[in-house]
Image (tube, rainbow, N blue to C red; front, top):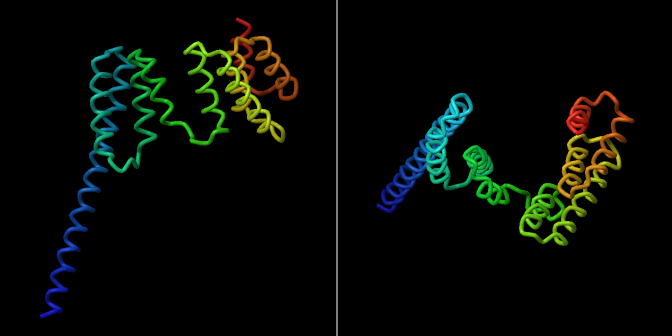
Length: 194
């Protein structure tokens, strides 16, 4: 009798697990389909400049985030939402949402730049400079050993936020003197010259 009860309990637990796994699989399918639809709506907007498709994409984004209760795709979902908000010209909302996508590491360059910008927009220029200078310090640490174009671009970006165009150009010119065939930096320099 005891074995029969244990067997029934095991059977029920197995059925519950199967039901849970089936639901997770169904949610993943729904998330994928909705995400694909969102991408299509963004592409439709880019082709036709039809903001209605973006508003629908924003609604679908809400549904995807609700379905993704385990946050398995949180970073992708947030970045997609930021893109949609930006295209809808809701820059402030997109900017504030960006913080959720950043690394928690207090030395992360993107996080430091974000907080520098956030403080700058709030008129806290002293705090802004502290964050921008900390970001420049982190960039310099990463550039000690090897050329990293992404880090050079971040330094240029920081100098531009600080309204230090001459410093930004100096960095580009120094790097191009060492690596004259760097297409990305050449393109940025050409944009500066215009």
